[in-house]
Amino acid sequence: MFDLCLREALRNRPDYVGTPISYKSFRLICDKNRWDRRGIHLEKFTYDVIESARQGKALKKDSIIMFDYDNRDPITSSARIKILEDE
Image (cartoon, rainbow, N blue to C red; front, side, top):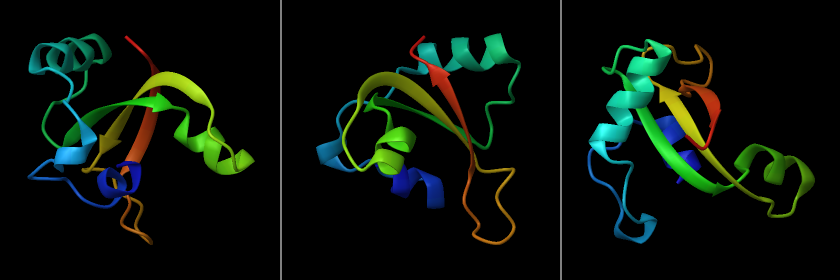
């Protein structure tokens, strides 16, 4: 799911992923951080995807990752990410 969100703003959510963050939670997190809600996506993960990739083993840790599609990497076209603690 991380790779899917990193590359493109999904229009349809795959069935195997589970339920998304509620819109109310999305709004609260965006308002708290003073983010414009357009162009971003929040996804909840139960594993630390960044550290798990570095170490090569799954590390459990609840977190929320913000994908910013308005500020993409110019070379890879990947969304900018910000990791939030589970809120």
